[in-house]
Image (cartoon, rainbow, N blue to C red; front, side, top):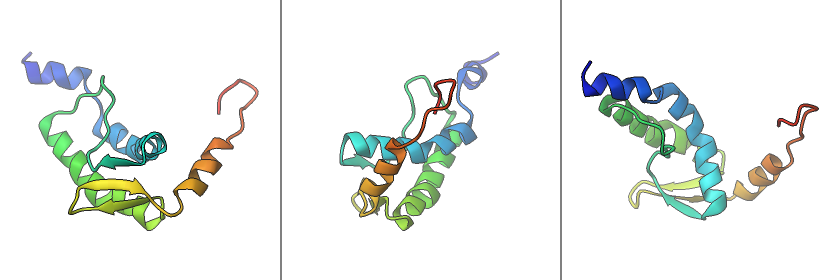
Length: 106
């Protein structure tokens, strides 16, 4: 077993990393008003090169444009930057108002 297969075994599923991007972008913007237009991976997440290239493509051409269309972010392709959109504060307020279930989860 070569190093690439070990990395893939410990790595992250592309679909999982992609699904998490929307929430990660909004959380990062809540902490800091702007960020670079680079996918956000947790320190323990690893993607092989092809999966990472796909993630970057989907992030730039699907995730960020959808967030921008919803007014949650402003995506400046030329500056490769993401900032809070005009509807960001309203979306953040709704996210903070989630209710806890009887088992303590949200």
